[in-house]
Length: 467
Ligand code: FAD
Image (cartoon, rainbow, N blue to C red; front, top):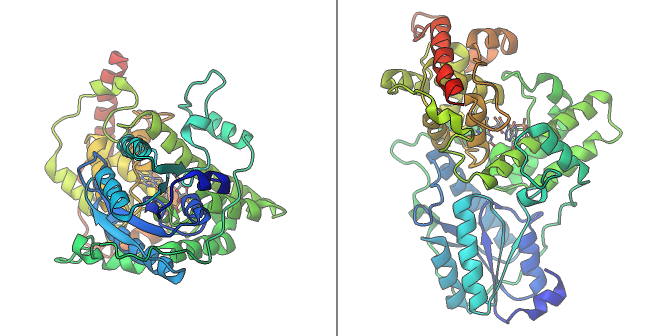
């Protein structure tokens, strides 16, 4: 919003609605609120079921608690504070507008179907009431409607999608954090964060998560700096090896918007310029992975039911048997007898994260060796990942299942033993998460890889016949 536009809006404070953008730096909605010049009421709304927005999983809730704490401290440092409200987002925001006599509401856009429906409702109601409602681009480098094929269609293959993004030129540079904001002086009621019970209590299973992560903008910026300075050089060569710290671990920070993709993009781009061939290749590869995040959001935007509906409808004919509850439990607990799968599932349980290569292997094992519907695995990841993302999790599972856009073909079945020889040859990763590995206490293999692979391929014939 320019200063001229800002002057056109009615007087009264600005409601700054934080959602998946829990940061001060490179926050276009925050910048617009500051430019408008009126006092700011910053708010976060916990909307758990009423608007059709998927409720957060347990690990994400843990993250959110700490991230909101960090955000409110950062806001206090520049003179503001964070109001916490709970309930149907549209109703909550509109009642806050009425309570405070606000003249404007601003936010950064989200791209899921239910999320967009909420925003449309608020925009309409605010506009009808003569209130300025404005949304901004803060969470994606390229919004889905800006990347189309030459015929105006949607991309369903990654490489041309990313090529089209790159051809659009450099994304804008990040905006600075404001030094100060004008707070709204009147008292505004706020929930106590603890009353939301986002953190687990009995039992408190989050010790491993706290050891592994520092949610919040400062943690995100530190993680980015560490990656660019210490690990980027190794990214291209070692990013598939789970025992090596070669990837950025930025995913939960990006998920909650504690760092913007614009900030990440320019940090990597700057590292690429004038760098050694090894560093430059790594930066290009890393940016392409940021591209996969963009691609996943593009898919979600055009397919709001990405987490529950096969992208390729021919997969609706897949003859999923009744899930084997014992096998599912063994997979969830990391007790399948296949070390790479088990280490991944235990890493997930302990830290709320799993290395990308291992996600592919663990997902393939569930879908193709245990013949359990990808949606059941997607839900487990949704509940246990700190980076559980409405777009990337659904797209990742559909990619492995073969039912997704630009997916790995169904007949590609990852062999966890061969994958381990290739990507964890020393067994360092497996041993880190399976202390009893190599002893009689380690579980026996719950399936025969060859037989289950054949059964999966036979079931796939049903899809081919239906296609
Ligand atoms: P880096 O390699 O450092 O990549 C940088 C960033 O790019 C990541 O932080 C992430 O934002 C993005 N990115 C990287 N790979 C992908 C990818 N394949 N798809 C989309 N974005 C990507 N990623 C999530 O952020 N949330 C999820 O819920 C999620 N679920 C997944 C489920 C399955 C079954 C699979 C196969 C992949 C999933 N991914 C998900 C993608 C990927 O595994 C993670 O983004 C990555 O492991 C995060 O580690 P990193 O930050 O070190 O990644």
